[in-house]
Every structure is written in C-alpha cells, then in structure tokens.
Amino acid sequence: MTGVDPGIAAVARSLQERVDELATAMCDRIRGEIDFYTAVDAVTAEELHRSVRGNLTTIFEQFTGEGRPGPRAPQRTGRERALQGAPLPEVLHAFRTSFAYLWDTLVAEARASGTVGSDSLVDVAADVWRLMGEYADAVATSYRETAAELMLQREHERSVLVEALLTGVVSDRAALWRTAVTLQLPLEGRFLVVAAEVPAAGREALPGIVPLLETRDVRSAWRLLPDRQIGVLALGPAGTAGDVLALLRREPAARTGVSPVYDALKDTPEALRLARIALDALPAGTPAVAQFEESPIALLAAAAPVEAGR
Image (tube, rainbow, N blue to C red; front, side, top):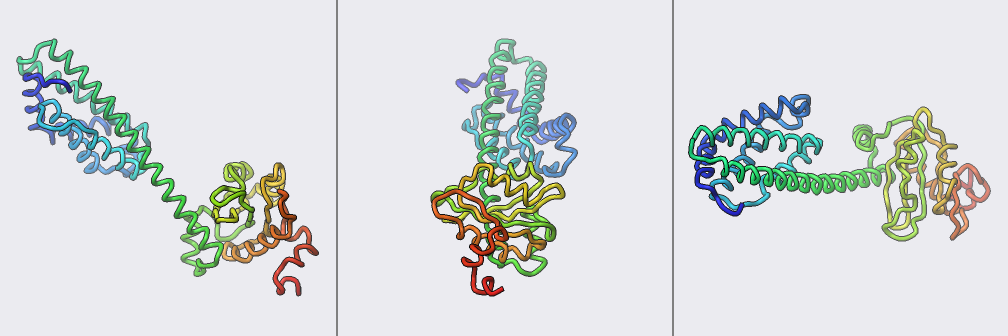
C-alpha cells in the first residue's frame, strides 16, 4: 500500500477497536454461506474466529500504517486448513466472503464518519481487492505446500507399514488390524504379493500400477526398495488373480514375480518369499511375469530346501 489516507486510517482504527465483534459477524456470514463450516467439525468455531480475527487485525494494521505488510497471517491460515483437511475451494470462498464483508463494513463506517470522500473510497477499493488477491494467493500457496508435505508424510508412513507387513514385524492381531486400516486392506480375503525388479535404485518398476489395479477392483499398498518394488494386493469381489496377471503381462515393464493367492494378511511374509522365488527364476535382463505356482520345476529348483523337499 503506497500511502495511508488519513480518513481511511481513522476508519480502520475505529474498526480495529471492534475487531472481535467484526470477526464474530464475519464468521457468522462464512458459516451461513459455506456448508463445509457447519456440516463438519474439522474447523471449530473457535479456530475459525481466531483465524478471521488474525487476518482482520493484519489488514487493519496495513490500512492504519501501523503494521508491516506481509503474508504471514494468510499463510498460517492456509497451513492450518490443509492440516485440518478443509477443501481449498471452500477455504478460498471463505476469504472472498470475508473481504466482501470487510468492504461493506468499511464503506458503511466511512460514510458514517463523514470524513472520507468518494475519491478516497475508490482508491481504497483498489487496495481492498488487491489485498484479497494477495491473501488468496498466499493461502493457496501455503495450503498446497502443506498438502504436499502431508502427502509425502503419509506415503512414508504407508511405506513403513508395508515394510512391517512384509517382514512380519506386525504380528499381533491388534497391530495387524491398525496396519490394515491405515493401508485400507482387509485382514482376510484374497491377496497377492507382487515383487518387481527396479530399473535403478529409487525408480519404480511398475509406474502407475495403483490406479490400473483399482480399475480392476484390486486395492494395493507398495514399498519401493533399492532393488525391488513390492506390493501387497487385495482382490475385491470383482478382482481376480487372472486380471492382475493379464495387466502385468500386457506390457511387461520388468521382471516380476507373483505369489499364489493367499487368504490372510498375516501370511504376507511367506507370500513375499514365494513371489521373490518366482522373480529369481525368470531369465535375467528380460521383462516377464511369473506366478509361483505356474512353473513348478524351475521354481522349486530356485526355492529354499524346505520348498524343494515337499
């Protein structure tokens, strides 16, 4: 803001003295116009009021020339709403609603004061809508950055849980249940383990596999290791092992081993061992897919002694 109009500054100081009252009225308008803020309790009334009050205070300080311009307040709001799981369109809608209310209030107070001319109101209108754009940008940027952080954090958590499932670290039923809930897998059903050879450390062997499996009613959770990409697959009512194998073989991208179908999530470590055996039995350097039970002679030769002795 290039300059502070004395009349507008006086109006802003007057409004600043009523900031709690204005924040309450603004929150009422937000809840009245945006269903999210009343339909769910992700953002409490107290949290909304604190956020609105903080942003209002920052705006009034800019109009009075008493504060330093900066995006800290809207950035904080964007981060909080992302952490609370509020949808970004609703968050931005709340900011537009708030600025519309602020403008109406500012105009009414200016006219009541009798000290602010029409030219000053025109000038401050440009400032208000410019601020709205800056605040919306700051909120959206902070929200998206926080959402990206959360996504990475959740992917890391999922990856760690998949590792625990694959190695058998999760053994008691309560821990297994919590893992299954987080990974969105059932405790019992029809499962497969897929082990695919990665082209290089840190690169997926089967990029884009998750949505492709979902179209076939197959949920999955994956772990990327330095040499393997490993997935635990849960077949839904319409999903079949044949569908999974057909998908993997349609355009084989890597040497891939698949376990037999098994019916309890707790048996995942053994299924992983069999998927690895299937993978190791494939010719080196040629993308192909093999399921453990499909080539018994070659697979038994590569298996552990306990398997070969059966």
